[in-house]
Amino acid sequence: MTSPMKPPTLEEFRARAALTGLTLTEEDIGHLHKGYVGLLGLMERIPQRWAWAAEPPHVFCADDIGAP
Amino acid sequence: MTDLTTLSIAEAGRLMTSGELTSTALTEAFLARIAVVDHKIASYITVTGDLALAAAQQADMERAGGLSRGPLHGIPIALKDIYETAGVRTTGHSHLRVDYVPAIDAETVRRLKSGGAVILGKLATHEFANGAMTPDQPFPAARNPWNTDYQPGGSSSGSGAAVAGALCMGALGSDTGGSIRNPAGFCGTAGIKPTYGLVSRCGIYPLSFSLDTAGPLTWTVEDSALMLDVLAGHDPNDQASARAPKVDYGASAHRSIKGMRIALARSWYESEIASVTPEMKKGIDDAVEVLRDQGAIIEDVVFPDIRDYHICGRVIITVEAHAIHRRDVIETPEKFGYTTRRRFQLGAFLSAEQYLSAVRFRRKLQQDTRAAMRGYDLVMAANQWGGPEVFEEPQQIFHFLGKPSLSMPFNVTGQPAMTVCCGFGSDGFPLAFQLAGRPFDEASVFAAGAAYERATPWRARRPTL
Image (cartoon, rainbow over all chains, first blue to last red):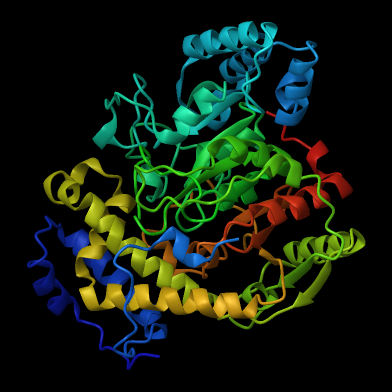
């Protein structure tokens, strides 16, 4: 599991939103902040430390998941 | 309800082969029913009546001349409105594409037409196969034919509603995180998410490059097999398309399941985190017994935590959907529905490292799932937690913050997964389970699903509209 990442405050999130290139209303930012913080909590289940050789495929290859 | 519209594809095919039924009569029956009842469930965005009748007459002429194009020859089919259709608008249920008329057909549509299918029209969907149904969209949201005060599930909402409502014999949907199986479950139809790469996505609006799949929803498992017979095959224009051997799926639906080994992923749907409703649990437990009576060997097996698949898939979809729709959410955000817009914007906040960790995690989950499945032909699990949502209920913007998705595991692993109706709850809504096979082993999925359907009475019950 990952080491918990501190969720951004609404102010921190707003500053970050300004860098995304998106046109966002204050209501958008409120919803997105809630969604991002929720997603971040769920993402604690995803390992962050991987063996250096654990290279993800650039394109998920259909034939790679096993032939019949 | 007329008798013709409740025939299965297999039955209609036999009747047309024997000369007892024409495609024209069948198509007219569906068009008449659409005209009379579809306003109650809003499953269609566009009805292509004239084109359908012309295709039906063509099919009748060909059959009369001794030409058979296969199991869908003369069969009325409808398409989720993210499938591009030459000369027919393809809206994605969005203001952004409300007037878009493609010049060529999606590869899957080309295959259907080549197989003699009659295209009845284009079906409602959650916006671009992702957003929820909100009132700020250009077409009405589809409703559940079992009770129109409820939602049909999604994102292939019109596909599930139209098949269950006997408004087409089969429909194409798409499944990135459960969008075929979710409406199939809530509408009581069969539906299969094929192995990633088995069916071309060329000409279908994308949502997530590395998870999108296309597949059919039908009333019976056998009918889904017959549709996949036409749809499956390599397409050089889809870079994820696999070179899988040709399989006779229709025949596999009649195969015995004696000795088939099925791993029951009970820990996904009965745990301290979340459990299905008691009626759903009973429906699945009873289905296990039915399959055992058919000779299958079913054992509880522990798979990776359902929440791992859920978040892995959700991060990948969020980032890839943002990449696909980024220009539009920057330039014309007001044209999206209010849930779709936020879901597509969220990906801008995720880092490359977070995305790549999810992609690496997917590889690990694929390997761990394969290991857990060793010695088993299929996985069996619940399809949905309980009944559908109320139609008028305000839409949750970020649905992934609720219970984990029961369908996501097989999007993450790429395996084929099918929804099978296993009865009805006291509220009148269908109950359902999933059967998932090894990659490219749709045949075993169809064999078990069809064996279950033959042994149970559920296909005789239809919603009243």
